[in-house]
Each structure stands twice: as C-alpha cells, then as structure tokens.
Length: 177
Image (cartoon, rainbow, N blue to C red):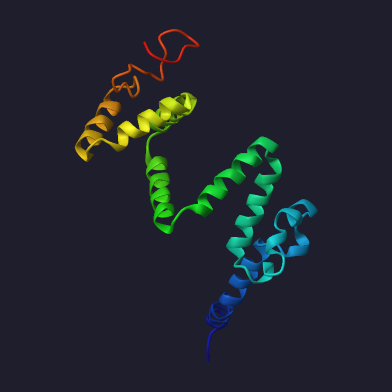
C-alpha cells in the first residue's frame, strides 16, 4: 500500500498541468476585463481575443497601456514607424531586428554615442543628408569599413571632406568648422 506522502506527490504531479493552465489563464485578461480605453485601442483583436495565446494578450494589453500614455505627437511617430515597418520586406525586417539586438547589446555609452550621431544626421538639411547617403552608397565595402573604424575611434562625427561634426565648436552651432 502507498504511503500518504507518495499519494499526495503523485496527485500533485497529475494535477500540475491543470494548475499551470489555471495560472496561465489567470495572468492574461479576458476581453471584458480590459478597460474601455484598452478595448478601444485593441478593437481589431476583439473577435479573436479569447483564442490568442496568453502571452500575446499580455503584450497587447501592455502595448495598449503604453499607447494611452503617449502624447499625440508620440502616437503620430509610432504610426509612422509602424507604417514603415509594414512596408518592409521580410529580409529588411530581419535586418532591422538584428540591428536592434546588436544595438541593445552595446554598452550604454556606445548606445548614447550612436543616438547623438543619429540626431546629428537627422538635424542636417535634407540636401546634405542626401549628399552623405550618396557618398556612402558609392563607397566600396572596404572604404565603408575603414570609415566605420574611423568613426569608432573619433567621436567628431562623419567629416567626409566637409568637416561636419555632431559636436560643435561653439554651443548651438552645427555645421562646417
């Protein structure tokens, strides 16, 4: 005859999947547990909400909360980014994911340095950005690699032959030195 402790252990092991399922379903909200604002944001998912995996429902609810906390300008930017994402090919999306992962593996100082450079580039006049893009596209892979290495060593930005720098000599001044 089995000892009481053994029966308890076997019973718990047999019930484990039911406990796991109950715990899983307890974390992801049902549609009627969402706030009115969350339901409005997630309306495209209403019909299939209950069939979505719990993790996906949690992510969607988290995204809806973030959306609600955004300013109108932030929402417009997010819509723009989403639209660009949808227009990407699967290969382009995969490259973007890889770049995202590589970026987040960098030390915070390097991340900040790259953010400053991206902002510097964004602040350039459109003609200058187009000029720099064309110059980059016309470089050989070796020239590009050499340029990237120079950038890693020198925080003065992409000088090319114009002397442009994301770190101005005088406060408030961007442009040729």
